[in-house]
Image 1 (cartoon, one colour):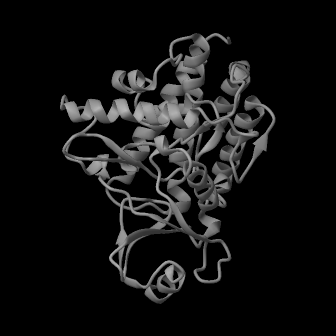
Image 2 (image 1 turned 90 degrees about the horizontal axis):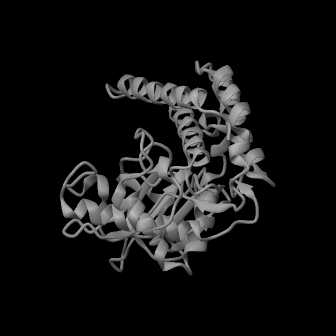
Image 3 (image 1 turned 180 degrees about the vertical axis):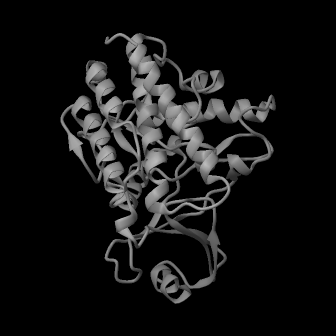
Amino acid sequence: MIDALASLVAPIGQLEDAELLTGGQFATTFRVTLADGERVVVKTAPTRTDQLLAYEQDLLRAEALVYELAASRPAWKMPQVLLTDFSRTVLPSDALVVSHLPGVPLVDAGFGPSSSDPRTERAERETGAVLAALHGLTGPVYGYPCGRQARTWRESFTGMIEELLDDAARWSVPVPADDVRAVMARHASALDDVTRPALVHTDLWAGNLFVEPSTGAVVGVIDPERAFWGDPLADLVGVDPMAREPGTPPLRAGYGALDVDSPSARTRLDLYRMRLCLVMLIEITPRKFEGDWVEPHRSAVTANLHAALASLQGQAPV
């Protein structure tokens, strides 16, 4: 693997050292030190594409696309693309090389989302500002940059859900498919309230947010490979998919004006929570997750999925 990494980064420098980074459950990521002392990050997509959910094909290409968009938008705080290789000849999968960000992941910073530490409030407030900046960009269509796309958000989101239900059937993952389809039919009109395809990160949890640990200042954002063009409210679920409230007060204050309380907004938030729970539940099987954490995780996600469904079943269509 070292030889392949050396060949990959050769156009930008000579490989001196490579360290495998842990924490992600999708791609394989290395911190590479070049001979001149520069550090870069190399990310490679899974080689077993038969273990991916339908929407996960070509995710690294989507990540590169978002990073390229970020190059002229410093408020997004994303790394710079240094090299891409989608030939799958140097490595057996897509590869992306980006600049190394300062700071540490928020999840490792020593202060957490439930903390009263002022660094927590600053990190959350600045996360809101980053999301607002991302959402300011309007895309050409609704849907995934390198996947399923549609002319309306209703069509796009309905397709996303159907893809997930197909994945569940393919992997024999028990999910309440009839209930999911019923609430989609009941509340499809709420999706029509989304009239602009904003860029949505979808996965800006504490592991994908880099901060300066002494101050809580947000210094970097990574892993936008699951981004889509759609409803900004979906990012309030992605920040914390297990929460029942749409973001913390500091995050919403940092974001600015954002409707989270209207009947349409509450309905859409539950739909996006339902979708993300389906993703988190279904992916366990093809990825062959292991460890003592898996069953508690499965139980928590299942409970959150049913809570979202119950909420949607109790709401009147808007």
